[in-house]
Image (cartoon, rainbow, N blue to C red; front, side, top):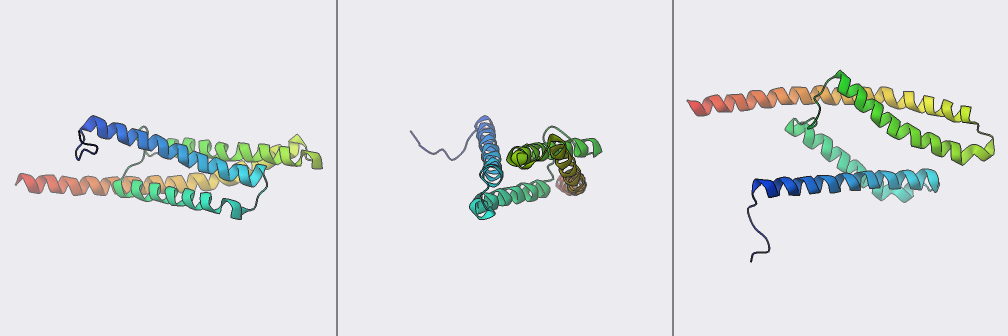
Amino acid sequence: MKVFRKYKDEREKNEITRISSIAFWITFWGLLSSIVIKLFIFDLDLIYTATEFIILIVCTIYIVVASYYRGIWDSKTNPGMKTYLLTSLLITLLVSIPISLIYYIRYVGYGITIIDSLRFFAIGFITTLIPMIFAISIFGTLIKRRQRKLADKYADDDTSQEE
């Protein structure tokens, strides 16, 4: 019995990829949660989250660069304004709601009212949503351009092999 097989069939490769992908996203969101908890709940300095922050940024940069290089947007959606807006809205809500709640809980003893917290949420929501739409739109446009280049490249390869 071989412990390591050199070649795997397609089903095994897909399962390994799926398992690795799920593990990666658990790690990604776990690191992000750890940073938020340390910074906002435990009120620690940024230096205490430096390792998690660096790993999170490196993973994010890798995902963006690898996705661009391969011309991949997402397996379930296509790049377009509706997708950009929905993705931006979701990310903005995932960032703004916890931060606003933590802000309210932390400073409620200092005279912060629910109105102040909602104002803080609105300002955070707007200042996060606008750059998020801008960044995701640029990335989507670059992905579309890369997909066209890859399609042209492989179309040229197919015609040269047929001759």
